[in-house]
Length: 429
Ligand code: C5P
Image (tube, rainbow, N blue to C red; front, side, top):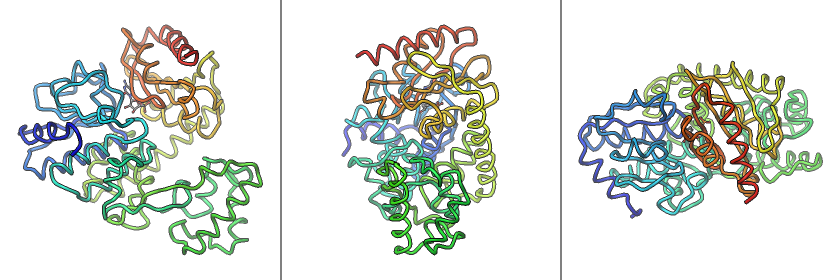
C-alpha cells in the first residue's frame, strides 16, 4: 500500500458528483481520463474540466463550490486548492489533507513519476489493475519520464503495456523509416538528420524497404538497422548513448496508429490539448471514435511547431547573463514551451543556458522555461526561479527542468530582471 493513498481513495468514495480538473497536456489529459473512468466505475456522476493552467487567468472558470479532483495541477496553488483532492507531481508548497503528490511519497515528480502514474496508483487502489495502465504510461512519456522506480513500473508491468528496447527516435509506429530518420534530432546525426535523400540511400545500402516503419521490420532487420546507424553516428562523432533505450507499445490499441506507441500517443494528445480541444483527447483515451479528428489537430500541431522553430531560428534569442530569452508575438502560448524545449534539446540555441520563452496571453505574458539535466546538476531549478521572479506580479511553478508562469502585462521587465538574479543565485550555490 502506498502511503497516504487510502485517504485519497476514501475521499473519492465519499464525494458524489466530482469535477475532475486536469491540465491540457498529455500527462494532464491521461490523468484526467484515468480519474474519470475510475470514478465512473465506482458509480460517480463525474464531469471533467481541462484547463491550460491554474492561475489568475483561469481561476474564475473553476466551480469552487463543487467537490473538485485536481490532477496534474493543484499542488502549486495550494491556497486555492487545499480543501480538495489533489493528485499532482509538481513541486508542492505544503501538505494538505487530500493531497497525493509524488514528492510526499519519496519520488521526484520531475523524473520518477508523472501525474498519470500517480492517478493510476489511485485507480488501482479503487478498481485494481486495468487498461488505464496504457494511458498512465502515455502521460509519463508526455512529460519525458522513464518509469524506473517501483511505483512507476506498476503500470508498465501489466498486460496492457509492452516494454521494448530499441531506437528512441520518434515515429516508430506511424512514420516510414526515411522520415523517422530525417527527423531524428536527439541525438542529431550529421548528414542524416534533415537530409532525406541520405536517409533513403542509407536504407538502400541495408536492403531495407523505405516504405516500412520501424515496427514493421523483422527483428533481424531491426538489429541490423540499429547496428549500422550506431556505426555511422559514432563515425561522425555523435554520442550514441541516447539513441537506444526503453520504450512502450500499447497492445490494446490499433497498429499503424499513434495510439500504439506510447510516445506517439502523447504527441497526439498534446495536439488535442494545446489546440483548443482537450476534451477530444480525453474522448480518444476513453475509446471514443474520434481518431480522425485528433489526427487533423496533429497535422496542425506539427506545422505550428515547425513554424515556431523557423521563427526562433530566424529571430534568435536575446542573451541574458543566466538565461536566453525568446520572445514571440505569433506562437501560441500553449505551444511556445514545446518550441523552446525542442530548440534546446536539438541545440538550435545555447545548450548551456536555460531558455525562457515569452508570448502575450490575454492581458499578460505567458512564460515557459526549459532546462537540461546537465543544468539541473549545476543547481538549476526553474520552478523555484519562476516562483521567486513572479512573486506579487503573477504566478509561476512547475518542475526544475520545465516550468511556467503568467505575468501581468506591465511587469515583464521586472520579472526578467528578478529571474536573471534568481538563476544567477542558483548557479552560485
Ligand atoms: O506551460 P508550460 O508547458 O511551459 O509549463 C511547464 C510546466 O510548468 C508544466 O508542467 C506546467 O504544468 C507547469 N506550470 C506550473 N505553474 C504555472 C505554469 C506552468 O506548475 N503557473
